[in-house]
Image 1: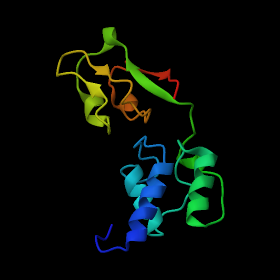
Image 2: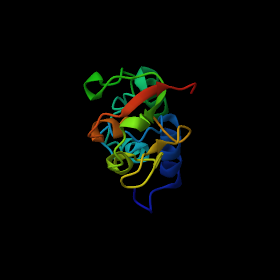
Image 3: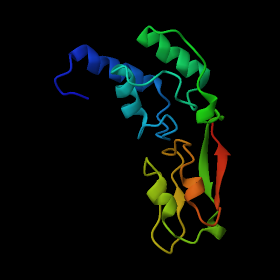
Image 4: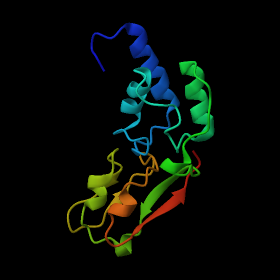
Amino acid sequence: MNPRAPLHSKALVERLDRLLPQTQCGQCGFAGCRPYAEAMARGEADIDRCPPGGDAGARALAHVLGVPARPYDRARGQQSPPHAVQIVEADCIGCTKCIQACPVDAIVGGPKHMHSVLEPLCTGCDLCIPACPVDCIIRVPTGR
C-alpha cells in the first residue's frame, strides 16, 4: 500500500482485514489476509475471493465497501468447519516440509525429528497437508 495513502484508506484496510478469517491460506490469490484487504481497499480485488470466510464474510466485506453482496466464489475452494491440523507422530519422518508450508509458524520440530502442531496457533489453512510426503497430517475439529 502507498505510504502516502490517506488515513481513511489505512482505516479501511484495518476494517477489511479484521473481517477476514486470518487463515493466511492464499485461496484468495494473495499471500495472506492483509494483502487481500489492501487489494480490496484499492479496488483491485472483489469481495468474493475468501472461501474460509464463506458467504457471510463476503456479505460483510460488501457492506463495508458499499458494493452489492454476492456469494463467495466456490471455484476457489469450499468453506469448511473450524479446524486445526494434527501430525500423526508415529508416521512423521521429520522432513520439515510442513514447517516450511505453514504461514503462521504453528508447526515445531527439527530435521529428522517428529513435528508437532501448536493447535492454538493453527489457522486451519491446510497448506501443510499437501506438503507432507507421508500423509501424516490430519484435520481435527476445534471449538473456534
